[in-house]
Amino acid sequence: MAFRGRAKGERMRTRKGSEATAVSDVNDTNEGGPAILAENLTKIFGTGKAAKTALDGLHLSVARGTVHGVLGPNGAGKTTAVRILTTLLRPTGGRAEVAGHDVTVDPDRIRYRIGLLGQHAALDEQLSGRQNLELFGRLYHLGGSGAARRADELLDRFDLADTGKKAVSRYSGGMRRRLDLAASLILRPAILFLDEPTTGLDPRGRTEVWNAIRSLTGAGTTVLLTTQYLEEADQLADRISVIDGGRRVAEGTPDELKATVGADRIDVIVRDAARVDAAASAVGAAVGTPHTTTDPDRRLVSAPVTDRMAALTATVRGLADAGIDAEDIAVRRPTLDEVFLHVTDDRRKAAA
Ligand SMILES: Nc1ncnc2c1ncn2[C@@H]1O[C@H](COP(=O)(O)OP(=O)(O)OP(=O)(O)O)[C@@H](O)[C@H]1O
Ligand SMILES: [Mg+2]
Image 1 (cartoon, rainbow, N blue to C red):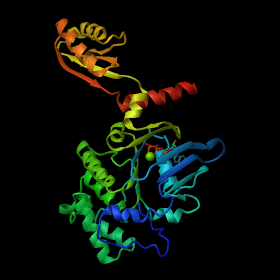
Image 2: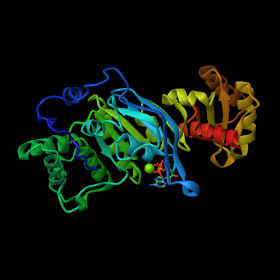
Image 3: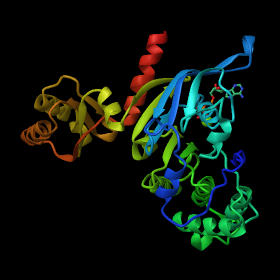
Image 4: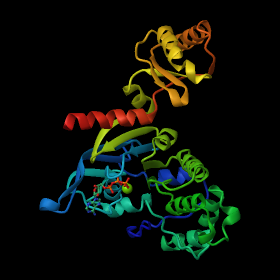
């Protein structure tokens, strides 16, 4: 996605020096305020019977220099929110600010401070990675040598230097996405929007893109990342807003969200499938709960615990006393999957 709406006289200088220095240059308003703010944001597509509410009073606040995950299922309103915040779409109601500027009042001021990695890539397949980046650089008025220098820096940074001459049509999915990411960073944006950056990638490609995103955060860039993958939000985000039906249904750090589901759990995998029920009794007695669950196919016994260390010790002892062999014992936090099901279930129950 290319932004060309840079205001006159605001041409970006190319300069040597750290990314952090360059980024701080463009944080010129609302010092200390949030990088991204949405208040009661609504978006209704169409009218009358065909009207579709995509955003239904969304609140969002993203602190500068943080990675914020917006997590939601298909149709939750993630792309709609990103399009409004990147000034590609006008909201129906509410307000939003990016870098201290209102999205409907000052879209031009916002556009040259942000980068956008859309849900679908915007690269020229026939050109090489280097040529793609140089093309973007020239579109953004960096000039021939400035564009070449920036392309080199970015290829190097995203581990694409060796493949810079290869046509993009011969790139793997992970390489393409990294090149896309590099292209969205041509202007050293202070705020970067990533709309489902790893959808469709295999695990290796996903890890490559995750590492690339992590490298941005040290440089002071604010990142808003949408994803359907709980693990992705868990890996990358400082804070997460869970959205469903165009509203925020939960918000917090990954740990805070997991804590909302309640207790930690102890999982035991027994060696002998025939002993799963006996193990459930032993674990229940050891940790003092009637709420054990079993999954015989996985030879799994699971129980909620309050004191992690005491539960682990008592479980090891209880299983040994009952003569049951365990293949694996682990105390774990609830997963974000459990958080997600918990908050979206509550919402559906409340609506019913
Ligand atoms: N241009 C449009 N016209 C009508 N309805 C739309 C339009 N764009 C989005 N919608 C609807 O708004 C809702 C939110 O869509 P949006 O694309 O923001 O969801 P999303 O969270 O990005 O989903 P996904 O994970 O599938 O990308 C959906 O019900 C969608 O069908
Ligand atoms: Mg989307």
